[in-house]
Length: 161
Image 1 (cartoon, rainbow, N blue to C red):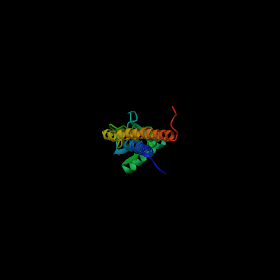
Image 2: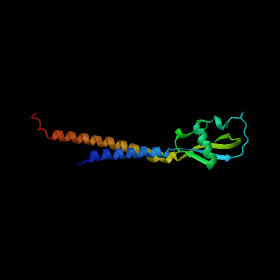
Image 3: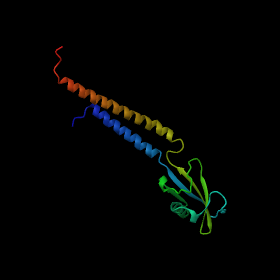
Image 4: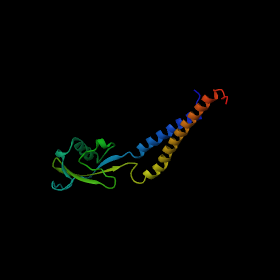
């Protein structure tokens, strides 16, 4: 198959757009972190953020169990997070969970490579890459169309006028 300049430009443009899109997903991927801060906290059911283990959802109980076992428990998808906990990126959510007569202080937060200031250099690379890819696609389509038009008109005999 003979690829001309226009076809190559379209292929390179599609590749550049794909790299920019995949890079955006990787850069802004978040982790949801649970950390055990204290395994002998004071529990007060009337205080906000103090939760009974039995009242937690299944995902909440799993997060508490694994956090207590490991000291830290990380999930990589928002779908795996517990609805009772808030995962913020500019601080910690603080909870005291009473389980089997003991109270555990657990903090939650969201972290990832897209948090903080890393989004700025990523956008300096990914946004121009995506724009250049789109420009390559437009230029390639234009070249392919012009080349097809030129070939079609070159086969015609000249007008007699």
